[in-house]
Length: 125
Image (cartoon, rainbow, N blue to C red):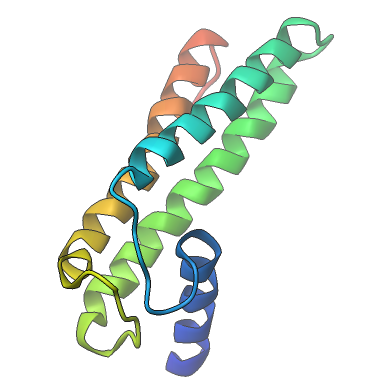
């Protein structure tokens, strides 16, 4: 993957969650993001309670969460390595310095739910 391809990929990921440039990050973004993941986890737990194979269902959700966790961690690595040349613009200039922390919180939210589901359903991580 060329540098241009990598930049285009991460811009697509970032636009999906934050919109087009200039990026405006609401102050309650991480709270709403965590609530959305909590709701998804609750739906899976409810479905697992009536499933004939709850470990498979939960395991599938964990795999999805792991994929997303790694994606946000990789996005943070890319962002930090290319901070001066990302081509990203933020409405609030302070958001530029907060963006890495937001990506970390997003990844950590998934990690928290992975650990929680793994513990409840006695799955190997």
